[in-house]
Amino acid sequence: MNKEIRGVPIKKYFTNLASKDVEIEENNVAFRCVNNRFHVYAIIFIIWGILAVVMFSTALFSTQTFLDTFGQGHHEQFIVRFFIVIIIKIIIILVGLFLIYQCFVFNLCRKYFDHIRSIDLPMQEATELQDISEKNQILQSDL
Image 1 (cartoon, rainbow, N blue to C red):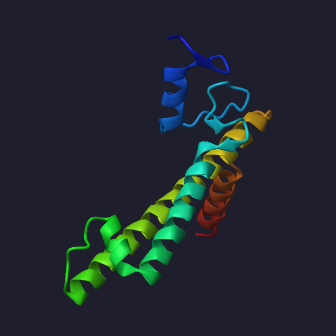
Image 2 (cartoon, rainbow, N blue to C red):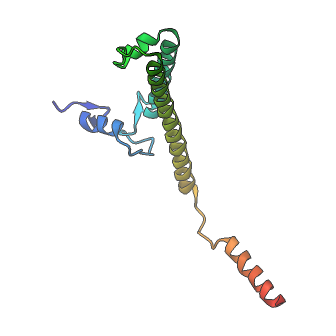
């Protein structure tokens, strides 16, 4: 049972798909992509979006079905049902905000590593430090 997907053992392939470590080498066989087209994150975000639309529309048209989906259909009082629906919607929105935050951080890391790779100039002292020392000398000479 030593099957492989594109030259990577199945266990390692799925471990890489589910891991939180993002590999930045797009040439790497273990890169977290689905069918060499989409990053796993994009697929997760699309699935979340579809589920959120379905859940919100279900809650809008049939609250009982929405509550039954989460095993809370046995509640009879309106206020309890209302708060359960609101809490579940808030959780769905928080998951979406977390996914957006994760995408933002992922893209910033990608830009950072692309920038680091493209640097071929030797590191120089920061000019801000030179400006501060010059201004400090001017202030001391005025006193």
